[in-house]
Structure formats: structure tokens, C-alpha cells
Image (cartoon, rainbow, N blue to C red; front, side):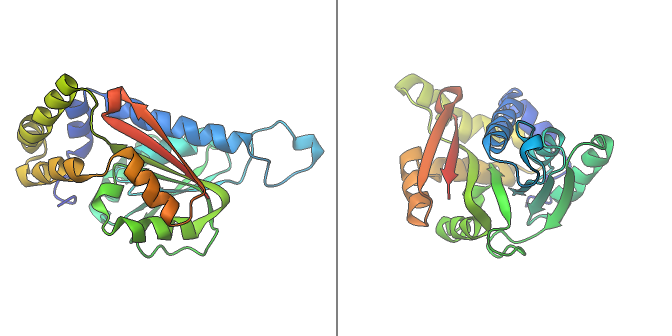
Length: 243
């Protein structure tokens, strides 16, 4: 299904969100950068103190067309960003973008990786951060996906999950639900040529747990703390969990 809509995926995202999806992803990247910049360098001595840490390894899971992956690499010189997705056509669409936006030589490297999020081809404690933008709701059972992410994170590493939530307030919530059930499938179907894919999208958004419940699921697999950040009136939440 995702392979069928890969070519029109970015265009549909921009139009359906009014461009807000760009801001949501940028916020997630900014939170990752802030946390990694606050961490001690992985190499170097006293002379290197105060400089931006080098050598970070970040996994962008369900990377899709690599918007988050490229943002991370451009902001993290010397890093390696694994852009992992189960859907190869999505990664191929992202590769076109990567070649067009080829980061400067000082930027981190983006390595596309076709992989199963339930069985990542990585050893334990392999990455310093994991980002997951609008992908967790497609992974069932969630507990298994979260446990696999926990396995590959270093101690002290963080998981960043960007996902749709339930908009708060009676009027706002009602309008949001009308949009999900009626407007989104029709417009998305026209833009991407696949109405069924956007019917599926609306269903998974409605069925995704609220922030508190998702936080409890993260704690249950071993994360020591979870912080939800409410964006755009609760349409989207950025969940940050620490190992």
C-alpha cells in the first residue's frame, strides 16, 4: 500500500496538513539535536569540550522519503543516520531527494536501509537516538516494536515518536474527526491516486492510543521516563522516551 503512494506521498502530506508536517518534523529534529548537543562528546579530550559532539549514530525508523533523516544529517556533522523503512519504494523516492539535497561534506551521512522494524539488523546499544515520525501506528503489536527499539538504543539514548493524537476540546475535536473521516480520504485519494490508503490512514489515527496510554506502553518495555509534547492543539504529539 505504501509503495503505491510513494511517488505522491510528499505532495499529499504538504497539502493535507497545510504544510504543518514540515514544522512538526523540524520540531522533532530540533529536540534530537538539543539532546545530543547536551550529551558529552564521544571522542576527544579537554580541548574538544564545548564543541558539538561528533560521531553520533541515529536511527530514523519508518523513514519514508527521508525528510527527518536529511534534517538530522544536515544538523549533525560527522554523524551517521540510518534511514530504515520496510517499504523499499518509499526509500527509493527518498533517495531521489537525498541526491538532490546532497548535504555538504561536513554534514552527516544518510544510509538508506530496507529493514523490518521488528527485527532490526543492528546489535544491542547501537544507536544514540531513534526517531519515528508517523510510523508507530502502522506497527503491530506496538509492544514488540517498542521493545526492539529499546534493544538497539544505548543507555541514556532517547526515542522520539511523532504521531497524531486526539484534538482536545469539543468543537476542535469534532472538526478534526470530520476532517479525518471525510475530507482526508477523499483529498488524499485524489492526490495520491489511492483512496484505500487514506481510508487506512484515518482509521489508524482514530485507533492510536492517547498520550498517557502510549507513555505507559513505553514504560512497560523498559523506558525510564516519557515526556509528551502537545503540538498544534493536540493534533500531533511528540513523545520523548529515555532508556
